[in-house]
Image 1: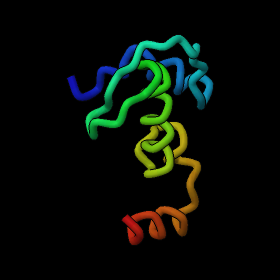
Image 2 (image 1 turned 120 degrees about the vertical axis):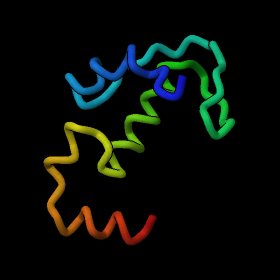
Image 3 (image 1 turned 90 degrees about the horizontal axis):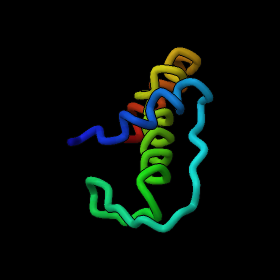
Image 4 (image 1 turned 90 degrees about the vertical axis):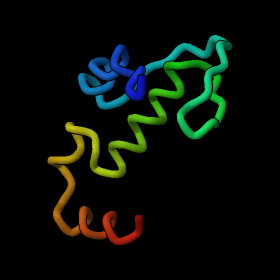
Length: 74
C-alpha cells in the first residue's frame, strides 16, 4: 500500500513530470498531509524522490558533489 502511486510512476518516468487534472478528490499521504487528488499527491511524492536522488531518471544525472550535499543535509 506504500506505493499506491505505481499507476502514475511510468507516466512520470517517461516525461520526468506528471500531468495531473485538478479534480477534487482529497487524499492523505503517509504523513497525513491532504492533497487535492491522488495524482497531485503522487506528483509531489515523485518530485521529492527525485530531489532526494530516489528517482531512477534523475539519480544518474546528479553530479557526485550534489549527491554528497544532499546526504549531509538530510
